[in-house]
Length: 180
Image (cartoon, rainbow, N blue to C red; front, side):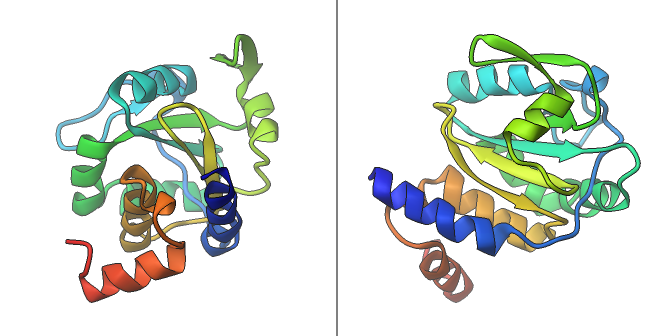
């Protein structure tokens, strides 16, 4: 199984690693709040706790305040009706400003947003990381992710299809409508 996850991660990184990105207007101070109809964002450490407690996939949005594509992703991807519906039922979402000195707990230590970004290998913005409910790193993707692609990726991970098949096979089945 570990080999399957490593293979999945090896596939996800190149497949998911294309190069635009987006950020949000929701800063870490606002994490855990939302407007009607929007997804709920959490601080990194709160998101980790909730993902474990609720047994859900954790999606971490690393962003900066100056990043144009981060804002586009907030509006077009996280603001997409289908993404919001799926996220509300199946995901825990966390935002990390990759330039903040604000501290977050992770693995019994405290790290700033900058340090977390370095630990997760953030090289561009936006960067989206995916972690299992148990806190296992599943993959990351730098750049803007269109809503339709985002939904395929999170379904593949949240519903643990990565334990059963390769990403390309899953994408093909999704496009053919075989997964229902």
